[in-house]
Length: 142
Image (cartoon, rainbow, N blue to C red; front, side):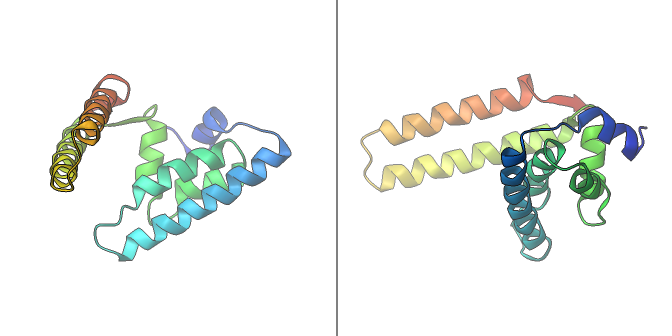
């Protein structure tokens, strides 16, 4: 298992001063959303923390280190980066199940709203691309 220092050295990058400020601002906004998810049932926590950590990795090494070590969502983020940006195989299946459920629900609601079929087709295409992306592009671990 890698240390936090090794992960930071591997993934921390620099960007222009203006972009750094923008990335830090948006990353902090995502952290606020992640903190809300600690207390609000159904609101994701790690799903907001992952893009925040990415934004910090390209803008602010100190905040990137903090995102990997904080007590609320640091452990899953550290595991994600330390294993080469992979997620557990069982998580891929559950993500696909939830994408499918929400897509079917969205298609049903769009149909009830009277859409002639364009909305449903768009949702179906995005659903297929999302599930394909999870299995083809995101690395997995046991």
